[in-house]
Length: 633
Image (cartoon, rainbow, N blue to C red; front, top):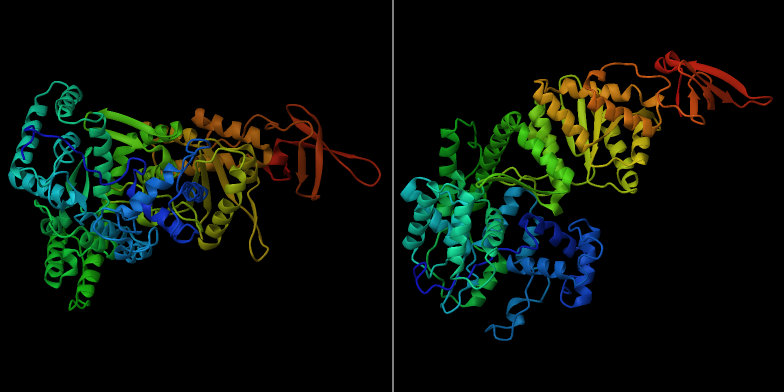
């Protein structure tokens, strides 16, 4: 078949637009595996129950009343089935029975392997196995195909002709996801190249793209918006294979995966019985790395890539006699390459501070997109804001630079091949740990803005900071970042008190900042050429030095004033009495007593203390606070 000749376009789907991030499937499957819904994902009651469980476990964010039908659960179930992690429900006309496949909605052998995958390399390999299975049917065609293998064949042909495997977004949307092995590979590639040449000379690429979508829509009987909606989703799922990465808004083959790609690419249909593909899917498909000779070839190719990049490695002490041993050596080299690439990425962040700031803007808005031009755009998916907040603060701190610990040790979350966040960091430790020459800065983030913010963050943040104080011999600071800081959260961190397991009282340095405040200060540092960690500590120190002289509302106002009037930072004075109110509680550090403010003027405050006979009135001025004679209780 050729493009535009009696063509009826059908767009294949590698995923689901209701579950746009395939790398979150692992979290959902883990929730399922520990629930009562194993084997019970069909039926409205089960769908609603599993959807609620996913929401309760923070895997999805089902806003109140948004989905009362259980559609979220059906989308997740479909993806579990599509990738071979659970047994799907066999249709009556399938040509095989449920007994032939396995118990519906239960974990498959491959699903159990997927659950054990913890590293990104292991998770991506599982997706690669699933995506390589030829399970997709085409109307009026005998046989099945794998969209990934078809895409790889197109990209290899492009590389042979142009020297680059790159596919732009519009090329993928119009001529890749709309085709399959029933089309002529040469015709598909020539149409891509023709589109590329026309687009180069177009005055407005955005207008050109719309016109080309309209032309292709003549052969498509559904909404034209599907071309780009499905295209973005399909490319994201294909990238989960670990052999493709972003190139602008399109994709390209990862250099270190080129040999695997060559062995997987395929331009023809499979005529094997469909049940054989289903069994392959649920057991785990075979990859070239499962063959000794191919595994050795792929390992040697990777060694050459590291040598050409002047990256040191040594696997001389590793045995290479079995497939398992060869792949262990390959994984070691892949980890070395990944760490090197992450360090190179970290070095670039200082030059990308404006993009980092734009991402903060999107997070302040709750997600969305900023399009720089037709081929360059940044996006924060609304249902992935917690992961993106950690990620962008990581990038911001890398941009400020001067770290003593590697970028991979700063973060606790996983990254994909494009250095985008897979999910937020797990519990048990802080979000970001930055070790500098003279101090440590721990950063904790949350997208929570409700009154429950203090209940969710107050205890774990203080515990994480306390652990860091014990583990490091340097001063430890903590920035708590949220779109909105609840006043109860601010009050908890203003006190900053924590008792260790040994009943030792600690006073922790935790400063709550809104993301907007941090963004404003971040922009200021780069615009004034002062972006270095000492300036962050200057801000934190100035905030901390006044916390005992102010109640939470005034302290938060003071922090906001520091951000807006940068010249106040490092000044150790502000207008007395620092926002103390009539009725404020004052603690006398000498007498170890708590009193109440009963009088005040610009120079001093009067505090009443009860005793056995009559109230005692004590006068405190600015120096009393600055010399730690007293503080707000």
